Image 1 (cartoon, rainbow, N blue to C red):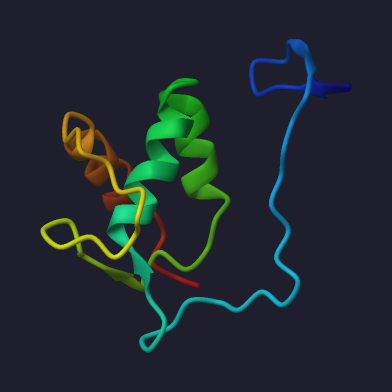
Image 2: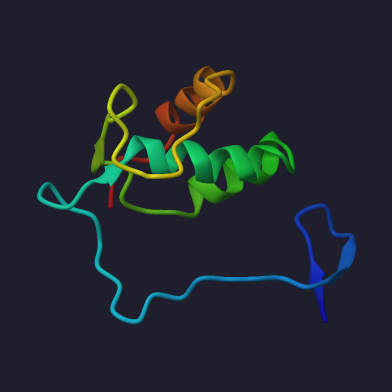
Length: 99
């Protein structure tokens, strides 16, 4: 069990999972991030609120390197539901393109 201080300053306890890459690489022109993956990740953040999703976008680098694969997703768990695309696009349009 973990006790985590969330964005809204409320503590929450429970089981939390995190992913830590063994040999992380920054995205670049040859290795862009698939939009289909970003859609899934940001949908999860948006489930906790727009402010939470915005904080993630603002604190993450590499948004300059995205490949729009929505019509032919590279990510195997791509969203079938397109309801949040406009909200995701708005968040990303405000992201810093400086990596």
